[in-house]
Image (cartoon, rainbow, N blue to C red):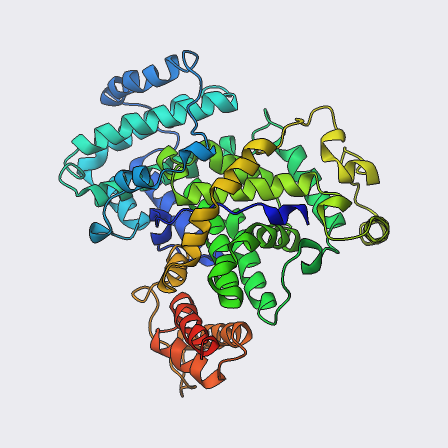
Length: 496
């Protein structure tokens, strides 16, 4: 396969995206929506007129909107020359002061009386933003300028002025999340872009290529693949459960690091060049809805500093994988032209049978534009998410960083699940055996424990099931930590 000569780009430094304490499920997502609604009600954001002091604040906010046409939107380049690990280390607080991000705590801070000036600025901004539609570039500039403005005001406020750099970093993350949650309706897949058309076409094309297997991408087939790939799929599919760019990016980060867990589990430290083919395969297996929209949304509105860090390089690899799929044809894969054509024809016939009442969108996807999506509509851009020449250079230059990632201690693999997995504090200990007189909560915990135990046994068939149970119980039911421990055990067995 042509892709196998390219190298994956990964940065060694941990990002603050690794430290999100949100649980990655629909229940917690709804709870977060309820919390923000309660915050709105507390702050009187909805349909409330501005008072005199808010009118004064509004004048400062107006300056942000009045300058929208003076400068172009500022977005970082993800080109190879940005791979500067020393610069990233300087930008981030030291690990000694690392404090997990807690959005609930930030909302509580915003509800306090001392935060009233900040909530007034926020209210003025939301009302000004709603005055008229904005182009995407205008949205990018307006939101970034407001965040830069409000961060200064927050640092001067009684609540945040004496905080450590790490604590204030988390407060800034909270403000970005709050702003983007509120403006999601206007900033995600806006009508002024072709995001939706590209979403639909990519989704349809991936459906046509659902017959692709590991061998077509030169991915080694092992007994461990299915469990890890299913896990990676589930992380990627969770993007649509969240509104904030930060949370969506964490889903990508976790997906990519599950892939690295598989590579290290199967091939040790020499398999970094397998990352991108596996990522492509995970995308094809999962076929996430609105993948282009999610990727563009993250790139447009995620913190510039974070897009220069490790998570930004995972995002670039995702862009590269999408670009590969968008232009994929027989010579891109390890397959003969005859077999390729036969599989395409068979799958398209199956899709017609499966979806007889569903039109293949306005694009009228055919065999030709399924192979070359850029030809399907005059509205679609000829340039993909990532310029091909830059992508190749980026991937090649990132090979060293990828190799270093593979050589890190295995404890690094477990830490990545902290982002959207329950921590020891947030998840109570679970019983190793059934208990009598169980309430609904205990039954739910036991069912979750059994489900996680089955996941571990599937991922590590070479380890005795009783050991998996002991490890999961010792980690208080935290799946991420258990995977880390079992990877270490499995690695020790492999080297005996």
